[in-house]
Length: 261
Ligand code: FPP
Image 1 (spheres, rainbow, N blue to C red):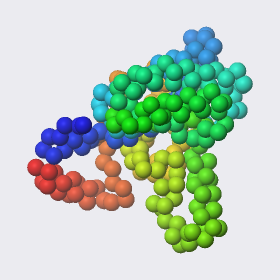
Image 2 (image 1 turned 90 degrees about the horizontal axis):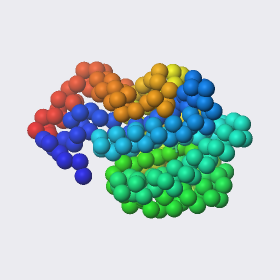
Image 3 (image 1 turned 180 degrees about the horizontal axis):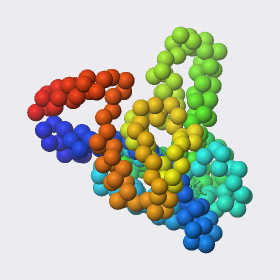
């Protein structure tokens, strides 16, 4: 449990993000720069995942979401897709006990039905093993897309309307949110994309509405604790207004500081 000082957790005192979401881009370019096959770039990417997860555990970040495989990534050469699937299985096998020991709860977000039986079984095993853990909530988005997520939530709600269990006017923003894959989780506070591209690429479209965006020029395998720290520092200095004025935000922060002291 996070120790509180003056009634405030580390997250509140240092303005740390509760939820960080990352698009890990640049594995292929990292490999090409070194005249290596793309597979080596993905393997180096998996090592960077480990460093970032360790940092989030150390800093007591509540939730980390990593975009590992989009629905569009099936269009890559068969050899690369198969390498990525093997890498997921091996990483799950190799890291499961370590994650469990570190109190990490792992969940895979996305349409898992497209994965091999072996991968689906591995996912179920690791999710079950870590389900009661209370430390870092680690979410891996795989065969995921923001538009797909909104589509599947819409289909569920439409079926409820068709069955007569729901009236169209009862469909609120919060009902839609609770039918999305990231239901019951705080929206990301900080979004990071590595690799120099500045776009969202169909990632967490609904949940990123008020998220602070940070783009790093580093290729994903080069990204580590130092760069993540830099992103968090940048985030801590931002004023999040959620539609309010800057003055309103300052006075409500002063108010909550007085209450907690
Ligand atoms: C994007 O780089 C990266 C991916 C599509 C795969 C992400 C996978 C990993 C980081 C490895 C393992 C992850 C886990 C969670 C076990 P790219 O290939 O598009 O790079 P490029 O733009 O330079 O070609």
